Length: 357
Image 1 (cartoon, one colour):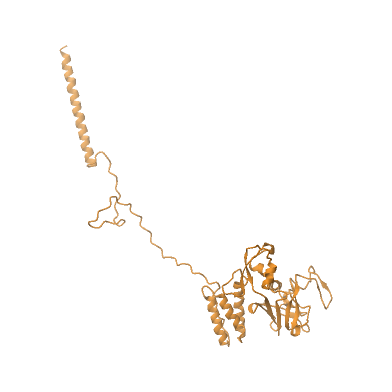
Image 2: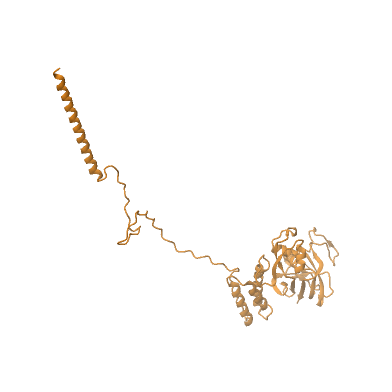
């Protein structure tokens, strides 16, 4: 019994020493942690990115800094040189007056004015057309006349044979289709064939015309002038030159009569049956030697040698190599494509054809 109390005291001392050791160990560990992590021993310090003072705006002296430093914006890449705004192209290519021998001074001045109108941005097409058309009425040199015709022909593709209607153009305009209107009656109103209205308005078939639709119209009629000595035909809309065509004319002894002709009412035909007045042979469109080509535009004589004459026409040909020569029986021959074009612009009963030497 005497040994029990002694053993109990021994166990109590052992427990006390263990507690002292544990506390000491904890204190030592705390000191080490505090040494490593500084004054914040119970949390990690967030890593800070290095501050680039060139990327942010520093407060002036005496100015309170913002509560939170904003994220630095990325530095912009070098700005490329600004691209110039596209310049609107002229409506026509730049042109220059052709060099001319012994030019007419007044004609040369007007041609230069017309070229300035064409080269303007935007092009003053109608003004240029009127100036150049006036030059054709002047005693200009042959080179000047040829140059003017070339320029007017190019202008015609813009103001006439397109869907565009230019301001101040008295030769073309717009028409709002009324219920019940037909292209044929509209063409008759403006003295032009309905085919040219279909072409410039991209109307595939006359039946596709719709009420309320606005179309471009041409104030006709068209006329033509044929020069026998040059084998050329000039086309005019009223009195304004449009373009020129190469033609074939009557051979010796059967010359194409000079004077004024009218496009015969009912005289426009597509590949009609034809009886040769000399051989008396009848030709049908399916015959391999059919001579009239694609179209027939009958004429009746009004004045000069043409007066009272019939049986003459503008027509196509099966022999294009004869265009530019005197080989017909008096008719005016054209390339088949040109004959179709003339068929689409000449108006029976209104369009006139003048043949001069």
